[in-house]
Every structure is written in structure tokens, then in C-alpha cells.
Length: 73
Image (cartoon, rainbow, N blue to C red; front, top):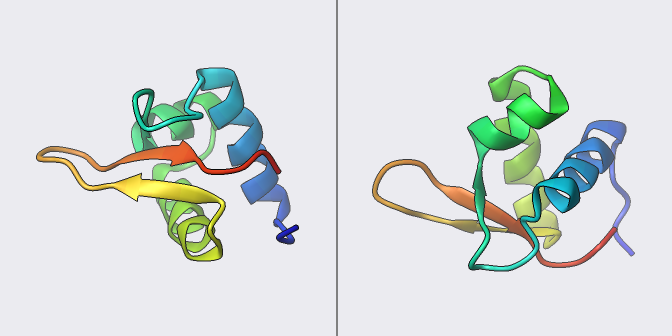
């Protein structure tokens, strides 16, 4: 089990509530930031770290990258 910071835990919970749990239901950093009610920059930085930890997957797309959970934390 990966140790998550409080903001990362908030992101996981928000992504679960948004339904971003598989590659067909990805959400953008904007969607997640709005759900968390936190600045997009803070969320984006946390998403990058979470991706490196293997908690979420980043999907590069033409406009905005999308994210989904790889595991329930």
C-alpha cells in the first residue's frame, strides 16, 4: 500500500465520486480540482506524484490529459 498525503487522499476520494476508475471514464485535472475545491496547480502537482507512485494513470490526449485510478487507496 502506497502512503498518500492528505491532498492525495482527497483526490482519490474525489476521483471515486466522479467515477474515474477505469480508462473509459477518465477525468481532467480541471474536473478533479473543481470536485476537490482546490487550486488546479496543487491538484496537477499531486496528480503527477500519484502517477509516479502508481496510484493513478495519466492518459495524454489532444487537448487536456485525463486521469483515472489504478487502485483504490
